[in-house]
Image (tube, rainbow, N blue to C red; front, side, top):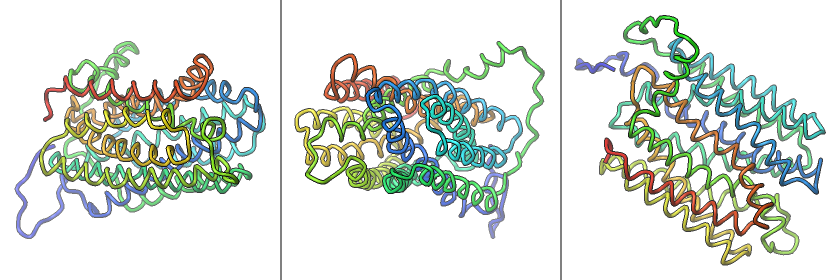
Length: 417
């Protein structure tokens, strides 16, 4: 994007679009709504629904649904990003994805077989990833590189805020699944309406280049071409491993609390989730803000990303050593600190290693394969570990190992300090 000397008094330019002050707060709302759906459904409503349908095989069924839905999540995100790049607009994809997700969540609340639950969750993942691809592309579209750590930190607060809201809503409606699904769908739909009505699409400063029609194979090759870029590829690998390690455990937390942890008398797993999630998310919010602000001030990204990923791996040992309620509280707080800092600063790092500004949404969509794909694959991986290795202790150890390897993957990145 071209830079311009701004006259005094300042006037809006294509590089500083109107309503810029409202942009980041509205992005925070949109990202919070997105994470409310992912965390509320994935951590509480979906496991509860599966356990009610098939209690004896709940681990395997949840893993199968997660594995199949991964195809939809990983495909729709970058495809939607590439299409929004081509059209030069984000708002239609944001609004369309959110309204589609609302319809799919309404469907999920009205089905009672494992097959229909799987179909409903696949469709929800598809529509939510259309929404996510367009929302994610707004930061590299409109925020200067020097402020992306701060912007990514603010947007990254969507995970602790949205995760807390989503789990609290889901925990309160775990016995009324239809209400829970509709409530979460309404949250994401309202957030999309606010963002698209108050922040209009900013037209390109120059017409988008006209691209000749290319064969399907060439389109796929261009679509994944970002992975040929050295720094982007290593950022992709580090993000994928970290997210897989994190969500392999978090996605099964309801079952862990019921089958592995000794809870205090009278505390049910959904009620325990309603306590643990705010503990984790408050810690995550603190580390998200501090990590983003300090990484901007010191102009350092890799050290924050690597150290936080390593910490996330190490804290997985806590529930192994102490499978108690106190152990889970300590684990939740430390894990929140690590994951919040990682996601905030890693997002800033990724925007600085994008191969092409003209294909920002497409390439961020490719990166979101490393973000969305592991979140959905994680239940499948976790179910295989729990079933094959006999319990949740191996799950914590494998999750920790994945995060530690993800920390090492940051080291080869050369273009960012």
